[in-house]
Length: 350
Image (cartoon, rainbow, N blue to C red; front, side):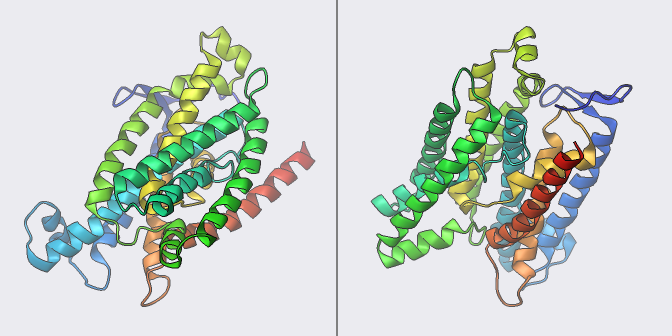
């Protein structure tokens, strides 16, 4: 539960959804947005083929032809848009789960929903040999939702509790990881290699054919999650307080979980499971912006983290473009160790 902050100034936003944002949170969010814009510009300009910023902007607005337009619009812009939109989706997904479980470890990476989405996509890829994005996306969403239903059912006992959700999710995640490994080992070597490479999580080779529909779905889901902010904040105060304010606890919780699961599954269907972003973005945003009733800081921090990780992945090793999942996994391991130590230290002081 967040501490009450007396006298805190807030800004009321009325579009695209009505919400309150603290002045500090608004200022930090604007700084993070500036970082996103700078990284986006650098990602469009720098690479094997250097492009001037003015030429990159011209290419986006249709004022460039030939190789410049191909490099900027077809290759780099789709990757930048994917990193921003998918990162925002993962950040909001993690914020929802962490709020529902009241635990910083309550993210789709930890409690199995990313693994479930990967399992669904694997079953489609390896079982049918499908290369259709629509079929893979459907498999990822179905796998994520099925995992959510199972975890929710296992955790439900007179109402679903955050700690039970985490424990049930961790157990199911371990089982799904074993199932994924078995599916890869029993499959044709070429198909297994392709699926395993995709399973690392990568933005290499993404195109507008996949990015455009997935981005539209993600943006719609972000809007829907914004509409559920009030219910989320009421649930954070406790079930009794939420019921007293007229919130249908289990209905709202299930809708929030479903929204957050699909926010994880849609990016997974395009780039594979990418860890760390959903886990770290909400916590970093909260520490920087302070207590906030809005999901916006988590969304912007998620976009910033994934875009920065992808920028580093393209340039960390000269002559090699790493999958973004390699970078986020490395950062996530360090962050998780720090988080566990900080939580243990906090409990000792308490």
